[in-house]
Length: 229
Image 1: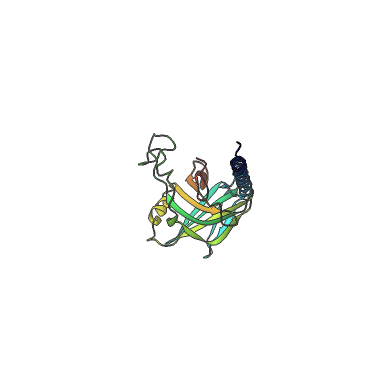
Image 2 (image 1 turned 90 degrees about the vertical axis):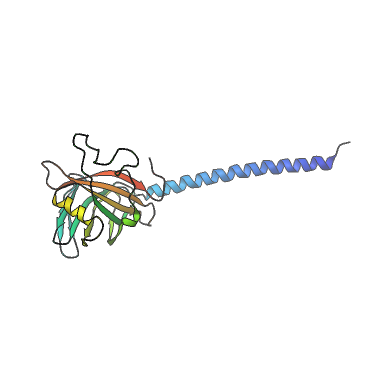
């Protein structure tokens, strides 16, 4: 004899299971679509800082104590006084969103290994843990005293000054500026809402037969999303 109560319960359970699976798949699809939409939205307001172009006009950068640096396109400038190191870099925003500079850190580049090629640095074995690849510590960054904004597709600049001879890095940066050695300038920036924070490491070195320092991007680190590498 057919047990209709049992069959009805099984049919109800099966329908519920099918509905649960469909709901699960629908939620997964909706979440995936939401992530894609969010990523597209963020890409639309994401800044990417790079050095300005060789043919871009020079930037005149003024500090609060009336010191002025003239920074050529694709370049950086440095000036020493008795107790202060003045630094500036000409920048371009290659991204699609307004860039807001949050903070900075400057260190002298390690000396290069003679005859070992253009990238190997003294005491810095190649690899992910080498000094050039190591992500800088956010605790070492100092906050920008002025709000610096660079529009999407536009040019601008970064400026900073080291005024305390006892602060970390001061002596090595001063020696590098005096000796025309290379600098690593780490800039912390993000979008206009304070998100999508990233660090760009810019190398500033003297070039033969070129007046002043020229700059190049050495590394990016993403802080609020996964790195591309």
